[in-house]
Image (cartoon, rainbow, N blue to C red; front, side, top):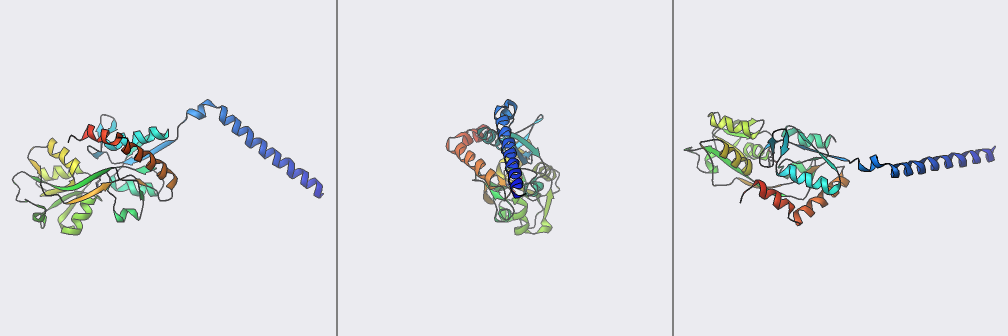
Amino acid sequence: MKKFLCILLAVAMLAVTFVACSKNTDDGNNAADETAKETLVMATNAEFPPYEFHEGDAIVGIDAEVAQAIADKLGMELKIEDVAFDSIIPGVQAGKYDMGMAGMTVTDERLESVNFSTSYAKGVQVVIVKEGSDIKTVDDVADKKIGVQTSTTGDIYATDDFGEENVTKFDNGAVAVQALLQGKVDCVIIDNEPAKSYVAANEGLKILDTEYVEEDYAICFNKNDTGLQEKVNKALEELIADGTVDKIVGKYIKA
Ligand code: GLN
C-alpha cells in the first residue's frame, strides 16, 4: 500500500512538472503574449495646466508626457484616469490605480498614506488677486475670503494659517478663479504654474510677487507596491539624468 502511494505521488509530481513545463513552452512560443503589455494606471486630475489638462479628447501636459516616457522605458502601456484630486490618494491606497501623478506635493501627512518617488519638479504656492486689489502681500490675506482647490496644499496651508472660516473650497482651480472674477472670494491660493495659466486666460487678474510656500512634486504609490515604485523611480531618475524631463518641462513652461 505504501509503495502504491509512493508511485501515485511520483506520478502526480511528474504530471505537475509536465504541465508546468509545457505551460512555459507555450508562453515562450506565443507571440500574442509577448506583445501584450502590462498596463500602468496613473490617476490624475486633469485641471492643472501645464501639468495635466484636456486637449480635445486627450489628457496632455508635463505629467502625462513624463508618465508616458516612464511607461515606454518599462515597456508598459500607460492608462490615465481623470479623477477628483482628493480621490487620487485613496484610490492608490485601495489599489485602484498603480500610481498618482498630479503635480502632487510631497507632505509628511501624505507620506503616512502613500510612498513618493524622487521629486521631478518644484512648485510654489502663490496668491492670485484681482488687479487693483488691496491685498498686496501674503500678510494682507488674513481676514479675507480665500479660494482654494479642495484638499490641495493651498487648502491645507490656508486653513492652518488663516482659519477654516476664511477658506472656500472648490472642485478645481478653474472654478476657484471664476469665483474670484465674480467677487465671491478675494484671492485664490494655488500652485504657481496653473496660476500663470489662469491669469493668462482671464483679464484683470495678477499674481502677488511674494511667494507663499515652496514644495516638491512627486509620484505617489501604494505603500505595499514597492516593486513598482522602484521600477518607476529608476526610470524617472534616468529620464531626469538624461535631460528628458527638462525637455518636456521646457515644452510647456517657457523660462
Ligand atoms: N501641489 C498641490 C498639492 O499637491 C496641488 C496639486 C493639484 O491641484 N493637482 O496639493
